[in-house]
Length: 530
Image 1 (tube, rainbow, N blue to C red):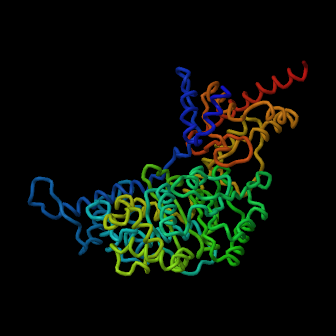
Image 2 (image 1 turned 90 degrees about the vertical axis):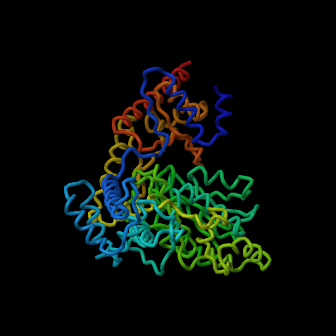
Image 3 (image 1 turned 180 degrees about the horizontal axis):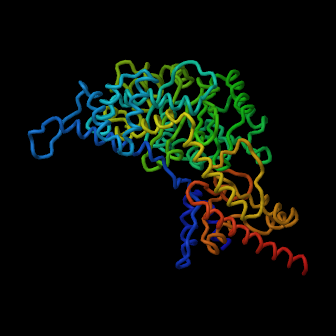
């Protein structure tokens, strides 16, 4: 087993998960409890009902054209009178789920956001029908301002924020990561051998991508301290003062500890940026919407920060593939491109010359769009228009939810699961006001010490390879967790997603973890007595 574990230890935790699943499913008629992946088992229903009702209205609009043809041929929606026709549709179908939300969304767009309701309806009908290419290709004209309002609400909140920002709608956070790494390379913002700082622990691909032959970047690890509630010590953040560090990538709240960065640390980073205006920051804030009054790094250092946000977790929409990249209209990336050597600028002029006569005026975010389709296919770039509709409806749902009822429900679900897990383990997790709870780390040493004392914990860590415990848990109990060390954690731990199982399942996981610890405690006692 030890030799096999050593081989498997080379795998990404997400690939290791598949091996653990095989082991957990090896016992016939036993329920497997897979808490290894962060795909939630909850989802937002109201904006989805709104999506389908919008689709029905759009179909009615399409069928107004070519009605004389019996072969099922429709036409494009028409702008003139569309708001009046929608009001008739809403009255006729007021009892149908999603219609009142959709009517409220039209009113909100008109009365609160100051947008033209007819244009909004026309754009959304055309988009939900998927009958045209995405134009503009970066994001639809009615989609970008609404998503911008949502990001301001959830990522900036009451924090002062001057200026505007641009958004690129992407195929989830995965595509956002891929595009950013690629365009930074293509535009010589990151070169092989350059150093980038990575906030640890972190979503594993951020650790793995820099090592690829495509990039060959040096990594400077910024380590969070579990003893400080998974915050970054000031001495770690000060590593960013080194001018050799070109960029700092982090996930906030972190994955897997699910701890949001403290205000003190955000302010420290903002101070460093004043001294180092060339430093590029990337913050992946997918879990930020699970926190109250969350403030993103994008809010405190907007001119230096690339914001990545995905709708996947909060709205239960991993299959929709909805992500965004946002950059301030005045940003370090555009300034860095403008400061490139003349010979490099000429190379980039040639790269983008097929899509613009003034390539040097092309913003970094628009280069992302072009590069996402290998430049030559820029004319067919852009996120699928029905996907953008659902993104808009998710955003409006959150903007219109004044009492934050949906957010409160999400927090109740997750906290209830966390309490059930630790209750059955028989320990109390350390209080952490910055913990948003989407994941939790079952730290082997910490749990063992709390359950049976420090001498036992020290013995266990000396005598057992931590990953072997994950295999034992899978084999004996059908429980699948991911290794915390696979995300850059420094202590042996298992990552538990609190999003994808029911509360009773987490109680069972807690019992299984407790039983595993107790078995080793018996061995510990027998060794003491021999």
